Image (cartoon, rainbow, N blue to C red):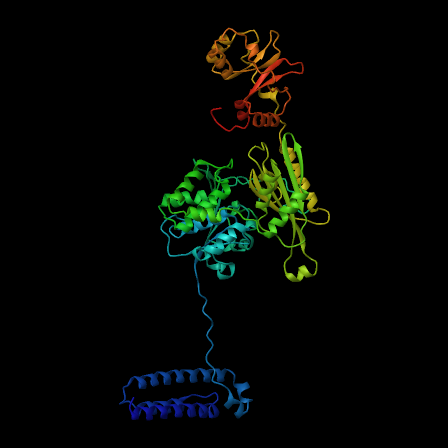
Length: 613
């Protein structure tokens, strides 16, 4: 910049400041013609200078002129107040810039909710659905426009899930409520739940969504919470509009009536399928669409399927769950990460509850099943991860059914809690073995506003002075007892036509009978049919090798063989088979007369484990 430019520039700045002061003093709400004239004169004096600095000065002059115009307009609008101000006050007033409202940025997106206190299956299914929607439009299943899909956890996580998220949060599409405006949400997905109550604060977003898509694998959940005086005795009477060949319930109606807590009534798309894991439903769609998950996503999907199928051992597990798990393993799931994050570790709070439960658990035997329950009285906040405590207790106490109740307080704010206005709740968690025939914990706890699987379910119940935590636990316990069927006894399924050997039969004739009947053992009876002992095939073979084929079997039989009465329960029969190592139990009456035989096959058949037995 040359000396002429410097001189012109500084001259302009000085005159600009002076002109603004003079103009505000003498023309507080008049025009700005004199000011603009002075500026034009300065600009014209330097028209021969075309340097970059002069051009910049012209831009500044233009902005200053515009600001002065806006100030004059504002002064006109407030003539009365300005005229009452002294010249000194007007002189000291800062230059006011015109107010511009903040721009409202729209961020269109889709949202997928897990249920509150998210487990691995809920989180995995939500992330899988987010991945699917990042490629496909939720409503048309066609190629998706560039609209992101976020996963929102309404409230809380299981401790084992919390640990996984702590290390993988930067890799997952997680967002919080405060980072999303409900009016920006296009589609809402809900996984592993059919009740709006289970998505917490997310309920308020349902009315603004263009479409609602529900994916679940729990059949017939009750979606209304129980009253504080008695449990509900209602079921979900919603009927599906269509059922596909693979037992998938779909609903393509649009009903955003959020006055009901049932998501099935307001869903645009409703997918309820009888599989072990809801993650399986979304993984099948990813596979069909040819969408490749990242290794950490495939790992999470495996953790979700394993969690809700018990590692493929729960009775609700299907071949589709196994195929989905295999597909995830083939597409990059890390076995090391599965081993690291797939095993629940009890933190100190849970270990403390476990120790209390071991001391206070009560166990009774009812119709052959061991039923256990315990109530943990805690006056603090909710403790997550009690499901793992319940599972540990069921194994430690060798129970067929275990009900764990834990009380905790809840309030709307810390101030209410300090004022002792908090509400007492009981978290009720149930677990049952596969052998607990007739027990359906989902049916029991659904009546308390919860739900889950037949052998694993939970509910949270509000208590009051007339409806205590003890009442809740006892009522649920009695509901379970009523589900247990009458215990089967030996006479109800024993084989009455029994191949027997007489005490007077020879070794050779008995061996021939065994070969013809293809049996390994048989009861030995006298001429009147009274049980005398048991004879095994190997004993006959050894006798033949010793050239004692003409001997009577009376000298080979085992007279101390275990027998059972006709009214021996199935549980007792199973215990004898396990502890005695026998596969055939003769059934005799009180006089010792042989009336039937119970075999391992008969026992297996009662559990309906195999189609061909």
